Length: 333
Image (cartoon, rainbow, N blue to C red; front, top):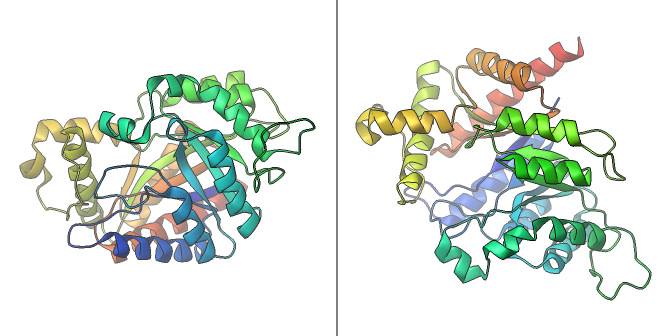
């Protein structure tokens, strides 16, 4: 089973965006050696703890520093952009780096109402999401006779498109177009089972994909012991709690008593949102990943984890890669 990285290019407290970008490149280079299939970056805006806002620019930087791993967007928030500019950006990336660029598409704004206004996004543009997907498929596909608008570069690069989502809507769009589908189960698992089943039930084979391809997103906090893994996880618990309270900031350092930091009630709500998670020692991580794969039967998994210390983040992804290799061996057997 292919396993990949979802990287938000986190900016920990006490560090800078330049540090975060250097860490992202370092992670991608390690991930390539550890057998990860893709390294995806996500578009977010007006968040001091995330340095991947100019997603296409950062994808090019990571692709230039790697050789074989696929690099892409998980994802580009399509209502923020004209389809033509997205096609030109990713067509340029594919022209430079060859056929290892992915384009995942979402219809959320990647920020709040102030961000939407600043970007010129609107709910009306979100409602045009399927039309924009269709336009992107055409702009990145084979040359079209008589077309008045073409993407140069872009046309005939056939950059693979993915639909991202956390609801049934994205599942329906992916099924309609016959595209692969990635579900945001790492922070919004409520509709996971229904969305997965909807996508597979209504999938229409296309020139892009003959069979449905479902990707499951999983948080991983791996460490040498269960206690240390739980400690590392408190960074993401704090960050998610602050985001829900409208107080986003840089990625906080871990704490020994998470309830004292955010309150037991908030922690329970956060843990429910982050329930698709593997945490702890290498053995614990492998067992939990195996259980999630057994339950949801994905075709591929994408792993993420907001960890304050870069060395600890690398170690977590190394543990996860080792676990996935063992799981893959057992599946093959």
